[in-house]
Image (tube, rainbow, N blue to C red; front, side, top):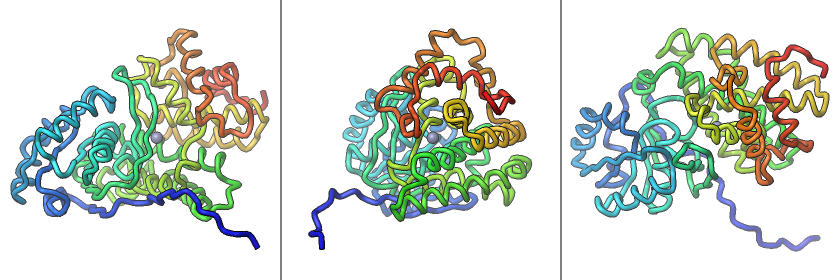
Length: 369
Ligand SMILES: [Zn+2]
């Protein structure tokens, strides 16, 4: 019989402590239970758009709120500035309002200052409102590193009315980001024997099927039942999978390609989920080219059809990168292939040359190479 040894404490962080969802549910009561002096963190546009409404909601609960912008990005400099704002306002709770970057900044700020955090997503473009993870970027918008947080947000307010005001393109991007869960988790974790990782991989398949079945109808009728299902899938179910699977089942090549692309400034006009969606095709193409994997070839053809239907980018041209210099493409590929990159979770070696060849051939119809 073996003697048990102490294991390192890895917290299981699956879900926010409280989730409120519905139409026009942005209220101050739940926030008031977390603190009396919120610092609201968002982008300038979001803060201006909410100028009339949010202060009123907070005042109704006699909360003393201040606002601060995270612009230009979730950077170390923005975080230092925001920590000074926390001090200045004597904030006792952080409210993140906006898209993925605003929410990541707010979550990381709360983590650094050890304050409770409420997230209010204004689009369904990512699962950042849910997860215990924050991405840090350079002031030029290049991905630098991610920070695992000790818990998911204390409160998530998913207001469908608010999310419906976001451009349709954000939901399409959210679908792309959520789809990646299956294509990445099934590669990195399908052989895992750990209970939660098995569960995460299965949920990722369920998530993919929900998106295949409901996305087209959802986009035709914003605010409708299918639309809500898809918003729940991109904001919440994708987050559950990240939480269940933990770091081991998070990303592979699709996100590594995204991370590499963020170092090319011309890529900044496309959204996170758009670059990730393209990255899924690159990942499948790598599996086809390096391994001769026929299932990957079939999956890529199936995705191309789906992308066409809902408007996700299929190629560098679709991302507005049709004319990038070869040196830029090489730089993105080298960053994506850096020693610590998740691309190396693929079951074969990937060099920048392979990756570049895959990046320029995502739409090829040839199944054999
Ligand atoms: Zn992502």
